[in-house]
View 1 (tube, rainbow, N blue to C red):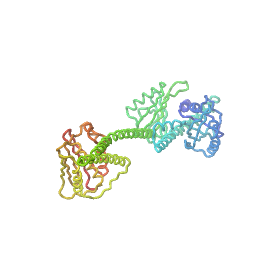
View 2: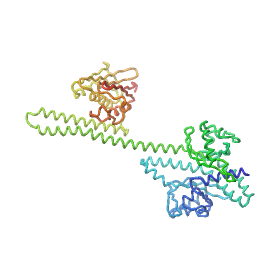
View 3: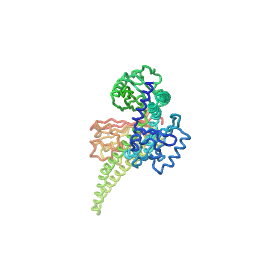
View 4: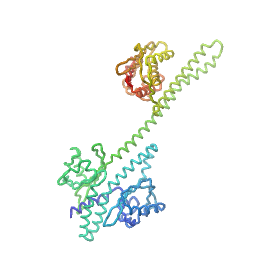
Length: 544
């Protein structure tokens, strides 16, 4: 009998220390049991909720619906969770209201139908959503994930609370009639054992001072393999799911708990996250004799937290990119606009007969700067479309050699004096199945960069090769090169090496090139040395 009563005290301690509000209501809506968390939640003193109607805890405008819902639930009882979507509100003793979430579980106590209600204040959920600044769709997903987790957590407590209600009533009756209490204790023990076996999404273990397992129950023990353990004389060392390091820590935590500490921590097993809460358990002499460990699976909650953090990180990165874009765009547009303005003023002053050559020079300067602005705007537009996922590769078969020769001729008419573009390619047509428009942008960026970052009287070599598996494009210059410590950032948006700060550019071209190459199933790599030049090598598979 002592062991049975001691088992009941385990559940009494769990009931009293639960952080969620728990009410036990009879079929007439009268509160017959309330834990400290529920009293604090509604602002009542100890035992002040007992014998009150449950409707007294609900604002007037919701009482009619609540009463009809309760009466219907008594007729057809089943475990259910009522979420915030049902517009549930609680009424505190001081008259203030708060949103709540309720999980209901029916059970039979002393041959009478009662309902166990788990009550959670969800008012903090809105504060969390406001702080994260995530989109409405993300908020809806996060809310659903959080609601699932809350439902899971409340379900995990259901079986334990049923034990507490039955055992607590039995202990109170025992004070009046020992024999009747013994019969109820036996019945409650059987019921508690059955309920504990269904402890959802986790398990509970009770250890004594010698690390022996006095109780282990819960739905998770089967998938974790704990159901195969022999519990008689079984100790913490026999728990196979823990490593030796975890077993050593477990023993230390058992001793700390029996010494009076309440511990909370997390563990990971097979990519599953468990929150662990411990509490000391007292015997009849009010001496701590064992420790209770409650393991709750919080994998879903962890995923929700990671998603929220990732959303916040993505938003921060987007804000940073916007700031860099505004700064860079302002700088890059300022130079050509100033040149255009200066040329326009000079044209106005030189608008006389005999000064046509100067006018042509200024007009050409305006055209060059307008073309530069068009290139900058095209880079911005290309990046925007890539970010929105609107760019697709529309492949068709064309002669890559002929395509490249035509493009080089166009570029040669605008290149600086003293720079030669040399093409090395097979003397026969080379048919490829790629997107000509994207290929033109790739060639434009690579060749214009080679021209821009190379000194006078240097050659730019373009080499096209064909093998059984690949078609390769190589663009080589003899320019300023890329510093070793900055090469890993070369394809990032808005990146410009420290040795290019005095040369016009947006820092977008190579980022766009890499994304276009990827869209056509290719790869891009490069080698570079300061003041000796840079070589880009692109490969596309032939069977596309």
